[in-house]
Image (cartoon, rainbow, N blue to C red; front, side, top):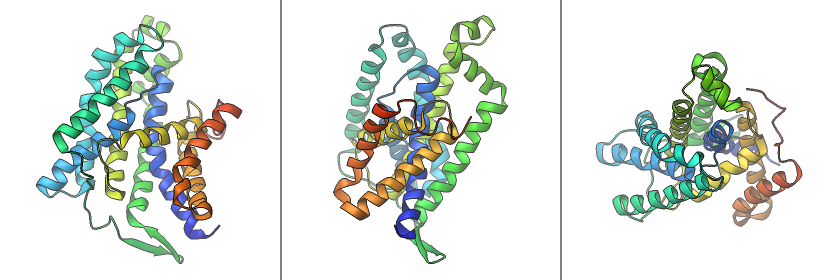
Length: 287
């Protein structure tokens, strides 16, 4: 395996980790598998495109606003739509988020059309050479931002009162409510935070490659594969799992061609669920 292939996999894996982190947070805290997570990712890209295409903003400047915009949409969706579903049957939240996924795709098509879009930036196609290894600039930026966002998420969850409330609501919602924690609000804030992380991943994805209203499903499956590798309850584990998946994918492309790119992701997802459903990296990192 060449250093170029290894570097490309590691850096792409950082972006996968960012997409998977939001899925892991929502599933770990709410017990909800959000099938609309891919649309939150693509929603961030489309929101950023309004500023990039129409106002001439750099995607990195549009990124915080895209994160805030998607979070503001996600909060009431969880608070007033998904919360009642969580109190119903176990299948109701899955059906609800799948319905939201289809609705979002229809909205994207109606508002933005079906033609592929991308977020133009001077660093989209450029690269730099480090120790003789060619690195695509956007993936280096994405890896750095993912590292910062993962570290920030870890600190919020482990060092703040809000993080303590999230962990309490996740461990025992009934006891947390008795202690005065507003569990529905904690759930909604967690969902909004995960949506903001998804939007950040969407903006970076939109710079790295083109996207359409239906691009969310492959991203959802990639994020689910990351979560399966990582296990629940570890931000560091998600980061490691994303990098591992990126390297695995990069190596498979070199050995078998681009047609195996997504096949490897899905195989990894199902194999880990079958062999080690608790995840490969759950004990590799904590917090």
